[in-house]
Length: 163
Length: 292
Image 1: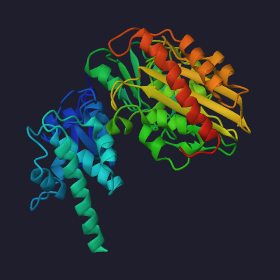
Image 2: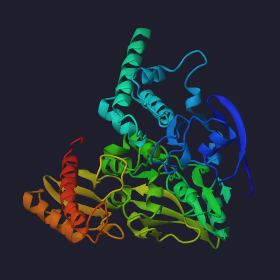
Image 3: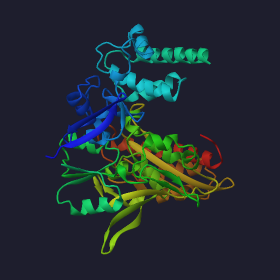
Image 4: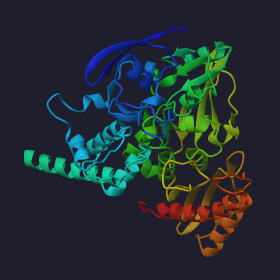
C-alpha cells in the first residue's frame, strides 16, 4: 500500500503528514496529528460530531480523505480558543449549559461559527436548519439554540460598538 | 487502493480505462466514502476529479444556458447569485440533500451517479431537460458526447455509464420566458432524510395558459418516471381544479413503488399526486414571475 505525503494548514499552522489513501481527514486529525477534538459519531456524515471547516467551508471530516487536504486550510475546535480566553461562543455554551456529555459540542461550535460568519443575525429557524446535521442526544437542542442566538446578539452588539 | 488526482479529463479517462479492478470517481465523496468505510465498495482506483480545471465553475453561457462543473457543491449552487433566478426548482432540489456539512461537499453528478432512485436533484435535472457531458477514449484520443440526464439512471444502484466514461459537465438549458420549475419531496421528518416521494415540475406559459410541461417523479419506481400523461393534463389548461386533479391522477397512476417502513405503496402512490399538485402550483406562480 503506497502512502501519500500531504502538506496542509491546520488552525493556521503548516503541517505535513503521511497517510494511507483510505484514511479520512478525521482519522488523520485524530490519529496522526493528535487533534482529538473532532469526534467520530457515525462515520457516515449523519451526526456532525466530526465537523471542521476546509477553506472556510463546513464539512464532515469523516467524509473527506486525508489526501484531499493537500493545499487546503483546515480549522478545527482546537483553534477556537486562544491561550488566554475561550471564544465568546464557548463562554455562552457554558453559561447556558448547552452541553452535557460534550461529544457533539466541538462539531456544534465549529458549525455555529461557520453560520455566524455567513449570517450574523440568524432566525431561530435558520439556526435549527443550519445545525440539523449536528446531532445531540443529551440537551434536546433548546439550550444550544438559545446559546447560539444569544452569542449572535452579543457579537452584533460588539460589532456595533466597534463601528 | 490507488488515489489519483488527474489534472485533465483526458488523463482521468486514461486512468479509468487502464484500471482493471473496481474504479470510483471522487468529487464530494458523500456517498463514495460511506461505501468505502463500510467495506461495501473498496475501489482499487479512486480518481479524484477536483484538480481538473473548470470542475468548480458555474458558468452562465452567452446563449443563456448554464454549465455546472462536476465538482460544484450544493452550497455553491445555493450561494450563486443568479442560478436560482433561472432554475429555482433545481437549486431547491439540490439544497434538500443532506445537512449543511453534506451541502459543502455533495455534487449534482454524485447524486446522479450514486444510482439511487430517490436522489432529490435528479427529477429536477430531468424536468428541465439537463444533459450530461460524458468524455471517453476514441481511436484518436478522447471525445465528449452529450446524454440526457434522464438516460443515465437505469435502476437501483445502476447507471448507463460504461468503462472509461467520465462525466465532465452538467448542461442546463437557457430558461424560456414565462417558465418556472419546482421540486417537492415528502420525508417523515423535517430535515436529514431521503425522499419517500419526490416530484419535479417544469412549466411554460403563454398568458395564463400552460403551453409546455414536464412532470418527473422520484422514489416511486425503480428509476425516475417522466409522466407524459401528467404533463398532458396540464398543457392547455390555466391550472384550474380539473387540470390539477387530472395531474394528480396521472402522477399516482405512474407510480410503481416499493413498500417499506418509510412509506407503503398506497402512501407513496397517493402522496405523488398531492405533491405533483403542490409543485405545479409553485412552478406556475414562478412562471408568472413570483419570487417564491
